[in-house]
Structure formats: C-alpha cells, structure tokens
Length: 284
Ligand code: SF4
Ligand code: SF4
Image 1: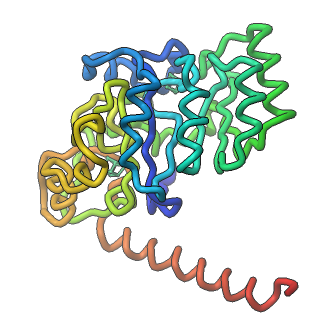
Image 2: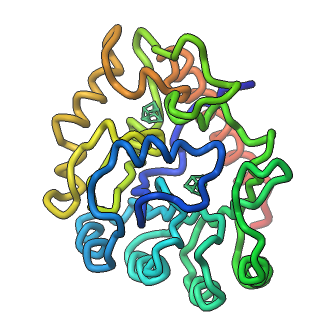
C-alpha cells in the first residue's frame, strides 16, 4: 500500500455536507463517527447555504461531497446553481438521490470543473441499490454530463489514504494507532479544504468525520475569520512542533516535513518542465 502525498495542488475548497447521516452507508465510510460527533441541524437549508457561502473568496471552489451523499438533500441542485454564479463547482457523488431533472439542470452549468461518479463495485462495498430510477439517472448522466472521473470502491480503492485519520477500521488500519511525531506537512494546511456541516459549522478537512476540530461557523463568521481563528492557527502551528494532540498526527496524509518539501519540489519541477515543453512544442 503506497502513501500519496497531499499537496492540495488543485487549490482552496469548501466541501459541503448537505445533510446528516448517509443512507448509502458504504462499508469503508465512518458514518458511525459522524453520527456520534455531530448534534446540529440534520438538513442544510438553501437559505443557510446562500448566507454561508456569501463571504467565500471567489478562488474557493465549492465542492458537493462532505460527509454524506450530497443529492440526498433535495435542494442540492438549487445550491449548485446558486454557488456556480460566483465559484467553480466540484461534485463527488454516487448519484443516489439524483433525479433525471437534476441531470438536465446540471448539464447547463458550464463551470462544473470536476464531476466524480462513485459507482457500485463487485464487493458490495458501496451499498447503492440498483433501482430502475438509479439506472436511468446513471444512463442519462453518462450521456449529458462531463464526467471527469469514475471511482469504483472495490479493493483497488485507495484505502490507505482514505482511512479518515484512523476512523475506518479495516485490515489496513495501523496497529497501534498512528501518531506521527516531529514536524510535518500537508497541502490542506496551505490551501485549506474545509468541510461545512448542515448547521454551517466548519471542520478541518474530509478526514474529520468525528467532528473533532470545529474551526468556526459560516453563519456567524466570514471565511477569512475562520482562516485566522485560534483553532485553525493551533493546528497550523503544530506542524512545526515535535508532538501534540491534533487530528493531523493520526492522519495518513500528514507527511514528515523533509519528505513533504522534497515531493513539493519534485512536483514543481515536473510542472515547470511540462510548461516549458508545451511552450516550445505546442502549435502556435
Ligand atoms: S462514502 Fe459517500 S455515499 Fe458512501 S456512506 Fe460515505 S458519504 Fe455516503
Ligand atoms: S487531518 Fe491534517 S494532515 Fe490529514 S488531510 Fe486533514 S489537514 Fe491534512
């Protein structure tokens, strides 16, 4: 099992959790931790969503993913249409809860830059029911949408890097539990990829299904206030300490600092070489 280094090269995101409790209940997903850790509103309203994203800087992409299947909330397409006026949109979905009308409406949105379809697997890990409506919506989505990636949650799914900071208990779980010591790096601490919950609380990233790191609330604070908040600063500062009690030290994406900067330099070098190659060789 190889570790992939999180460089967060794709930029700043706000992931949106549109509802509480995911009925899909995939085997590799720590819904138990979300149920135990979250006690707010069960459904994100369109009104709260619009208020919460009103302070987001324009370079922050809005990602429909979070800790539940986004289309289980019937306002999901309304939220996507609303956010797309100011932000690029990214979607990770099993298509469960989506209807044919949603597909037609999504097909008209030009700035969905990423659409990842999470499809059923031959092991029954993704518990997606094969209803007639699901099959029709999938067929229509394949015809009408620009699907940029498909993920099949079988044994090839990268379980090492998606074990949610030790919350997923399976054969890949480290024994004893992971606790990284020393300086570390993670791209999500440079270009935040926060997750918003249905009550508009914001947690650190997609690893925090247990809601252990509430950084603030987007109905009460701006995005920039949350970036400057003491809980987020504490986690940031802990990167350069020898030890500490922060979620990152239990996470597979936290990378010893020298290794992290070596990967960053490598990625930057490849990117410069590619740019130079294309500048020289692409037809003018
Ligand atoms: S992986 Fe996605 S669809 Fe599956 S239970 Fe978790 S949130 Fe729901
Ligand atoms: S928990 Fe920390 S190290 Fe892990 S992905 Fe989130 S920000 Fe990065």
